[in-house]
Image 1 (tube, helix red, strand yellow):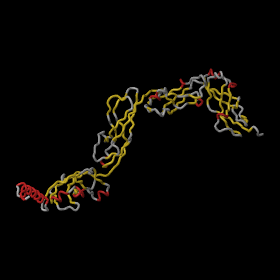
Image 2 (spheres, one colour):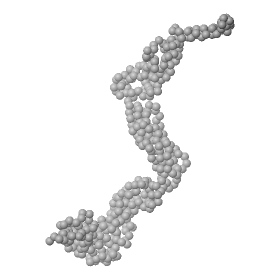
Image 3 (cartoon, one colour):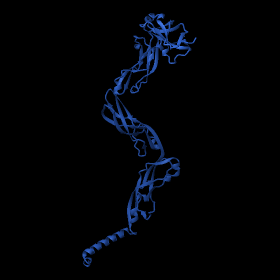
Image 4 (cartoon, one colour):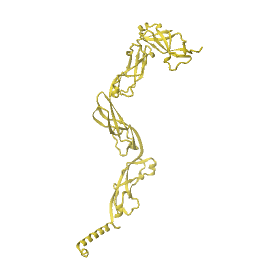
Length: 417
């Protein structure tokens, strides 16, 4: 051991250890100074009370940070973090109304660590802030996609998100005039397709608004492009009360006469026309009638033409009208236990048809039928008014009854006397 202690290797080892200890002592001693830069310190901005009371806010400062250099005791400075320093915007008292303000920044010590000094100016030295009132606006999202479909097909777009709430500075939100999805799809679309599209904001001139101060409740939405076959179909008017074998369709015209509809292929294959509500010809005499009618497009189809009503013209002017007196009354389907008597002995009715057909009909051919099976009120003892149906005994007669008729009928129970 004595030999080792006196050796050069031992002396070298001792020298290295002492040098290291001396270096640590010099650098971390209480009198040693050290400089470092603290980064990413959030910027604090406090509005004057008057501005806050008037509803003003500062926008776009959520990500604002700054840095500053500090000098001091190495151990203190080495342990400093951004939580120990506050960067404060100065001259905020100048904020009195909406606008853009440039504010200088200054560093401030917070916390218990104070044995250090700021050795540089804050970087950046100033910030620009936007002061305004908060505003929200809800807009429908318009589908403005550009694409092409095959001839004979109709397409429409359905958005998962139909509206967006835009919020932020009043001066910016007020410029937003429209929200839309505007993707362009190449090629020809032959079947239904789903895409995800970004929601864009536009001003009244059609320019895109890109403002970091704006917030949107949705920024993207799924868009379904539905592709369906389409057809142009005639609009038809169903007729009720037409005598058997008599064709009156040529006396009915419809304007517009056709309509374009689209829908699933399985449904479109079954459609050859689109009807309006049925017309009972007994309500129209031998003149010209013009009526507006609703088009009955199936709920599963799309009305591409956007035609909801049509003008129907009924021209029966070439027919004649004649009055007949009916004396033959017939009672049908009287419930068991009841009997009925018709107080009316004759009934004047009107028939419409060609002169030839009307000449072929005599009053003896006409029967006034009262049918209890066609009433929804049931039978009631006493005198009541019942609908009368006029039947023409000659089945070949091509004429129809104009108007509705009723007769007073006295009903009694069979066992009452």
